[in-house]
Length: 333
Ligand code: MLT
Image (cartoon, rainbow, N blue to C red):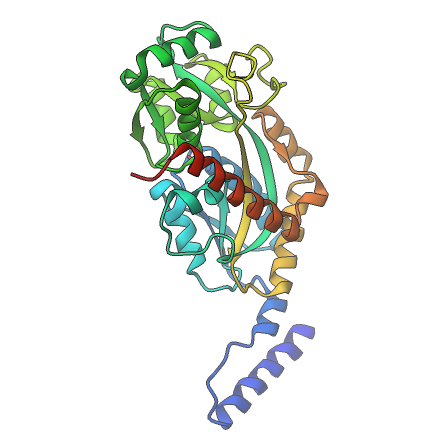
């Protein structure tokens, strides 16, 4: 009944506007109340099968059930995750095109000359998950321990082929930070995401990959690749035998990858509230939390899954990475 009344009201507003020769403006308020009435596209800025894709599909499926509409994952890879981000930044702010992105959204602001303003182009929906990277290598890579691989990386420098998900991606930032810590420069092999990069590591086509636990743990457990150390300050419960890189000799080394959910700037508040409620519900789901935990990543606590918390977090990370990138002289070639 309420929907019929709202529908009639909308027609009346449109007819009135037409009658006065006014432009037919979209009845924003009513549309936001009815949202969502059609499938939602969730842009993953990397290739299918990688860590961002895994998180998007897990969380997206649950949110889709809550919202009563399909969530279609679209992998828009390129330029270290900035191509997908730009696509969403320039989409209509109607809640039907969303972005899942990680730390590289923040770092991209300093790595690239972008056609969007990272801290103004999006409406934050909420923080999702966070966790470390793992330093991994092909199964027949000679080093046996974290100390040994660090020594080999330092000695071999540019002879080491390191895969990553594009300039400025998380895996690339991890590699650059290793370069800085070891005083060397690797030969980088870019992919559209660490999904395909991991396939080539398993096939022995590249030497090293610094990947998110969400993508690395299944391959480590399957004995397909070697794992040496994690990039968190402390050891990870799911990979207890691996030291942290700090423990292995790179003092102060710490890189965390975190995902957030975004809509384009100017998305109406009722839509943001619905999306945030669906995200909160997904991140309280025991099945999702168990899967996150198996993959070595953690959901942000409930009070940090808010739009305001993501807004503050993103701004903080943009500043932090601007500093790191400027001091280290990293840039997109
Ligand atoms: C990265 O290296 O930034 C990610 O692993 C990208 C991805 O999800 O493939």
